[in-house]
Length: 436
Ligand SMILES: Cc1ncc(COP(=O)(O)O)c(C=O)c1O
Image (tube, rainbow, N blue to C red; front, side, top):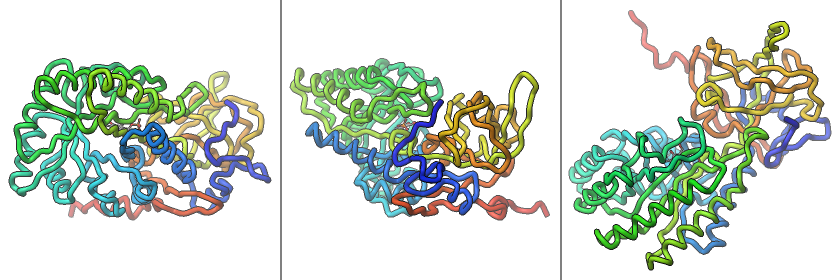
């Protein structure tokens, strides 16, 4: 695949890949590799784009950043500055957001197995909303609230029975899912009845998320349509009105030329048109629409820089080019067979002369970052830039083989700022306790 730029990415006057006005070779030199580089201007553009679309449509909305895509204090602060809300799924994400100074009332708490401690923490912080996922949680959260003499706004997560076209592991809206209450099997209605009967809950609406890396609007529209039609029935039968309809995230991004995502605003426009239709034809008040984009806010804004090391030729079969990271900083190729594109950072425009496969350094044959990548001839010490690593890269990073986690740097207007330091060997052993 030829070089394709995202956001502020360009080839500078000396022919190097530049992001946010900063030469990537200089970044690699200054901070070492592997290094996640985020284009702040592109994140802002995406955040503003989503907000503007709702404004233009005249729809009351909240755009909540799904922080599982990339969770760190700096990104929470940036999303707060951009006026977004936040979706967290664990005590750890919630704690990080609070450390970042994110206002608790704009945080929504998700998860299919929140612990009592996490629920207590959320209530103590004064969380904006808890997305109830299952019957166990209804009971436990009610207990927590009664003990604390508190109340909280809640959404009920429903699975609308939609099979979105994406990888099985990132599908979430089908009937057979670990998340949420089934819309078609009566569980969602039972959950609504239970929640309405408990005085410490303020049931403000419903939530659904059908999956991730989705390129069409059909699945989103079908899900929204089914929920809206069900809301008409529940209004008539239970007197229940949803002030909020949270339609989740899942808008696709362009990892490689195979991916053809729609502009983010188009997903929103088409979904809203459908929701409006059902609302108008059934005289249902238009609910406030919440969305939770993760990947589409930060995915394309991230690029990972690696240093090339060893090379192995398997005659007439394959050339393996190994880099100084791998499944420890980007597990998606091993987990979902995710595909990526990359260039040599000091000559992104140079014509490819060979096809190589980019291997990680972990002790797993499956630790391959990119299979069959056309590249110019490259050698040890050169910097490889892998595109579109901003979502589910750092947030899924791990210490397999005791490889320290990579650093994260933000770039904008010719300035670079370290926002997550590189893990050290000392960090790796700091929680270990000696046997004797
Ligand atoms: C409930 C929920 N909301 C939002 C998202 C964000 O999805 P994406 O990053 O594809 O936009 C996810 C991702 O798994 C999710 O589970």
